[in-house]
Figure 1 (cartoon, rainbow, N blue to C red):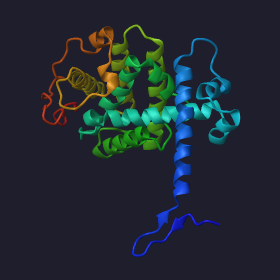
Figure 2 (figure 1 turned 60 degrees about the vertical axis):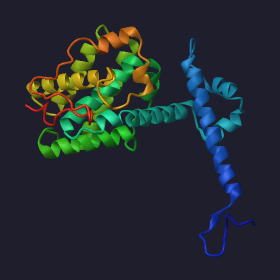
Figure 3 (figure 1 turned 180 degrees about the vertical axis):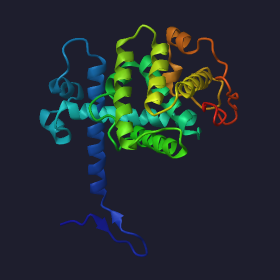
Figure 4 (figure 1 turned 90 degrees about the horizontal axis):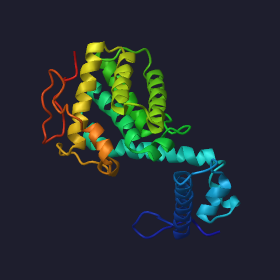
Length: 273
């Protein structure tokens, strides 16, 4: 039997080229199935798609599909996780620079809801079953912010993971509501962030200031007033979405200092009571 590695004098073992080729083919096929599923659901206009629609789009056999996934729900969960992780990575230039856990939570929570208002297709995938499992980036970031806020005395909660699960559920329902359409999306987002903060034990005054601060900060970012780059979904807004998100109220929240453009970061402690 051929060995999977070969030894060369004075060097570390080299992997068998055939193993690498097989792994590459597997990754490519998995990506092909995921991409086909996304296209099928993005173009959906009739009954809910089924596996036959996906394999027809991917031009593969049913057996090939089952070599990679047990069901269509499995593919949708993978897509949701991938899009959730990508979203978390996309917002790091504007979210990751923040140090205060209250600011980080308010901005991060608002960003996911804002994306749902702008990108309905993304919203449809990201709230699928297990899209926000405990090993995803959004869970890790949210849990870290909650733990930090608990330790600093800003959040008052019994169990960080319970709080994270509760808030992920609230976020998912909020994202779906914004996807379906609400009368006043910005007011809905404001109320959602406020209620999330109050559920963490923040006073109404603290929650109001954090909501206003997050709104101001994101308007500055989406309006191109910060050095942090914007992902494609934030650039490709239509006129109505831009009008809603960039409506007057660019002034910082009461008691907050203006964001420093060089760091794309609002002043620390601005949203505290």
